[in-house]
Image (cartoon, rainbow, N blue to C red; front, side):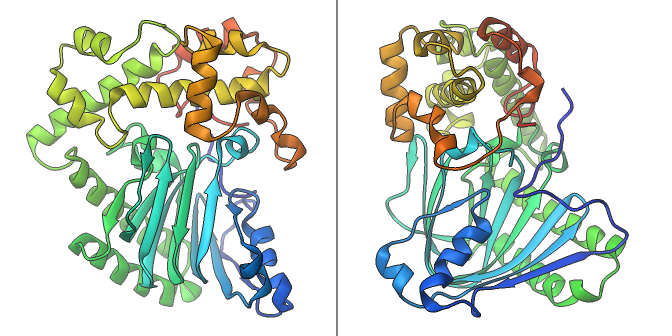
Amino acid sequence: MPQRPSYPSASPEPRSRILHVPFDVQTEPVHRQLLAWRERIGKVLDVVPTRAQIERPFRGLIDTYWLEEFLFANVYTDALTLERSIARISQDNARSIAFHIVMDGDAATRVTRPGKRQDTPLDVGVLAVDFDQPLHVLRGACRHVSLFVPRTALQEVFPDPGALHGRVLGANEPASQLIRERLNVFAANVPHMSLERAILRLREIVQLIVDAFGAQAGVRGSKPAVARAIAFNTARRFVQANLAESDLSPESVVESLGLSRATIYRMFQHEGGLHAYIRHLRLRAAADDLVRFPGAPIAEIAWSVGFNSASDFTRAFRRAYGFAPQEVRTYKDWFPGERLDANLQGLDLEQAALVRASWSGRPEGHHAA
């Protein structure tokens, strides 16, 4: 199924020049500064403020540049807690990959995602985020660059770009230092660049980032790395195509693909293991179906994505996301998001499961309209 680019907010129509949109909360009254920032980015990310944060001054400024399919944002904010929940994801259409690069300031960042909690702050150089997956981030005051990139731009190295989600390049790694240098030059010159030249330079930076993550994951470079990349992609596609099968398990993947347990473990270590990866995809598919089929019983949705019982599904959903499955359906009452996936509207649960199994991969094929 063709992948349509989607971004944090509606992209302007294609232009022959760079579109620059600045924003600064400094002109707002103190008690409105953090709230104004929250409203600005609230289409895709929830800012989770405390009362004390709201009552004190907040610095937040952003220079956003639209470059056709790319978005480049040069940002400074005080310390923030940011969240993209499964409820928010199930109600909007932001599905791009973003790279957040800490340029200067406090690089200490706590990152939490389903199945992976980071209790010790990481010194982040580059953080990769898939907007199709939940994330909770505690970030210090810093200047950072956010690059929003279409998934298709990453598929040469990561055929399933969702595998990047939550990956981090350390602040002191040589690759991070080089990326920061390139971005500082780009940020200084982009106001004076032609659109064509800016896109060329940005593509080079994105390739540098992707190559660094590819080397980290062991899927870029040598012949063994290429073999690992092929096996990794084959395993992910097998899981995605058989998601609705209740007997899908790490054992069945090992048996079907002829890979060793040690190889499978290394492939899915970033996701917390293959079992955690399977569970995450099932829960993610269920969250979509809970919104798409508001009248369907929880048990039917659980069965359609491979769970054997509603109680097991509900426990797993609550453990992963912090609330019950039925609460996703009421999220539209908290936030006027867009209903997703016009491509599957009108199908029943069984038909949707069959269509999902026929797609070459998820979440690549499974995107909001």
